[in-house]
Image (tube, rainbow, N blue to C red; front, side, top):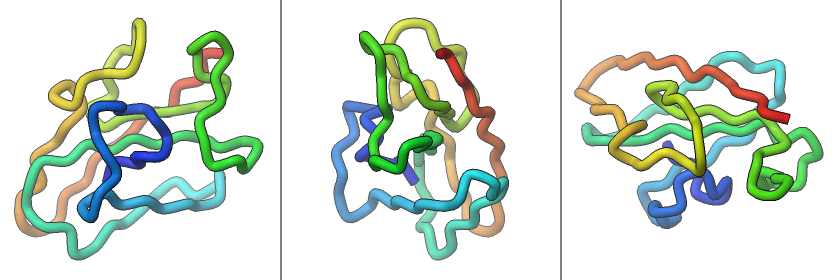
Length: 102
C-alpha cells in the first residue's frame, strides 16, 4: 500500500508488492482488495498540482501527507517500522491523518 513514487518512505523500493491509487481530494475512504496477509505501510499525499510527486521547499513538504499509525513528524520521513501495520486475513481498517506543514 506504500506509494513508492511519493518518496515518503525512501527505504522502500517500488516493486510488484507496491500498490498505488490516485483519487480525487474529496475522497475520504480507500479500499484495497486482495491484499495478502503481511506487514505494510501506507503513505498518502495531497498532490495539489497533479504532478505525481510530493513537492517540497528545502526538504519540507509543501503538500499534505500522512502515514499509517500517524507518527509525529520531526526531521525526515519516518522509518518503516514506525508506520507499518500488520494486515491479518479478513477486514482491516486504519485511519491516516493528513498533515500540512507549509
